[in-house]
Image 1 (cartoon, helix red, strand yellow):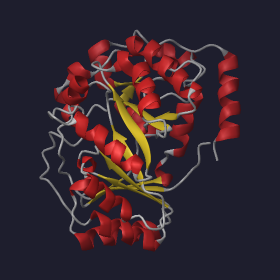
Image 2 (tube, rainbow, N blue to C red; image 1 turned 120 degrees about the horizontal axis):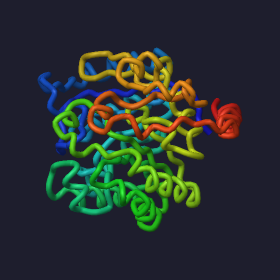
Image 3 (cartoon, rainbow, N blue to C red; image 1 turned 90 degrees about the vertical axis):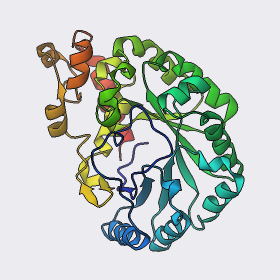
Image 4 (cartoon, rainbow, N blue to C red; image 1 turned 180 degrees about the vertical axis):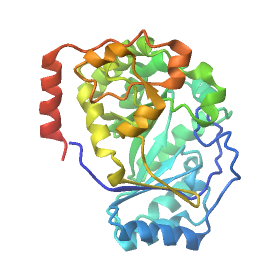
Amino acid sequence: MFKRVKKFYFSSLSSCNENCLFCVKRESKDPEITLDTEECKKEIKKGYEENYQELQFDGGEPTLRKDLPELISFAEDLGFRKICILTNALKFSDKKFAAKIVSAFRKTQPSFSVSLHSHKKEISEYLVDTPNTFKKTIKGIENLLNLGAYISIYHIIARQNYKDTPDFIEFLSNCFPAIKCVIFSFIYPAGAALKNKHIFPKLSEVEPYFLKALDLCKKKDIFFSISSCGMVPLCFFKNYEQYFIAQQIIDQPENIKLIDGKVKKQYQLATKEFHSKSKIKPERCNICLLNNYCAGLWKIYAQIYGTEELRPVKDEQRLRKIREFIKENVE
């Protein structure tokens, strides 16, 4: 079930202990920013007063904050119904640190969204551009699960890992059966990604592996979605279009608050206005039955690979299936 929940993504620092090749904030010309404790509390309180129900500690890497336990407790006392830490889990490889953060959750379930982009050490460390990190992330996941935390996985699809996507789902299912949520994302063309265009995969090549991975998720009862920042044309998601359309519906600006350092940003990534400025559709997309739902191709992607991969959907049964799914599963 996809629910319209008001979420507050709070990035209180820009520093990180990895250097991901696709990081939106890496290569930024802006100076590094870290809000102090009182500034953080002010923004968190304001978010709660604006009726946001879920708080997502974003980064950089939020575990680099020494006051993170204090901020978690503060947010819980305000009344946030869910608090999630978006993390690479490196610091959680230390059991004492993991226990310290988990114990800060007194009223809500400890929740973490862990970035993991491969089950293969060499590929993982290549994409995060930081050596000796893979085992630490895996250990961090183990420690958090042993402490009773809820974990979802955030997985970027790149040229270096797309063929392994089905095996990645098998890896999660076999090694971490308690993990029942995977958020996929294609590369958002900003920040470091603009200097690392070799990591952009060709979507038509990704498609069979990605669809097989989604089949496995469904078989293994693993919830999946695709982040709005990494949405690509729906014609590559045959039989799964409805899941990603649903995500776009619930990710509208009225449901999302963004604070990035000291700057409040309007969340636009799921709006038609944003898509029209940053993406492109060839003329043949006008005859596609999913055209009104579809974002199109990133303009930068089209510069790399062109638009010939796009295939208009003409199957009215697919459209009916999507409409029925949205009606029944989006609240």
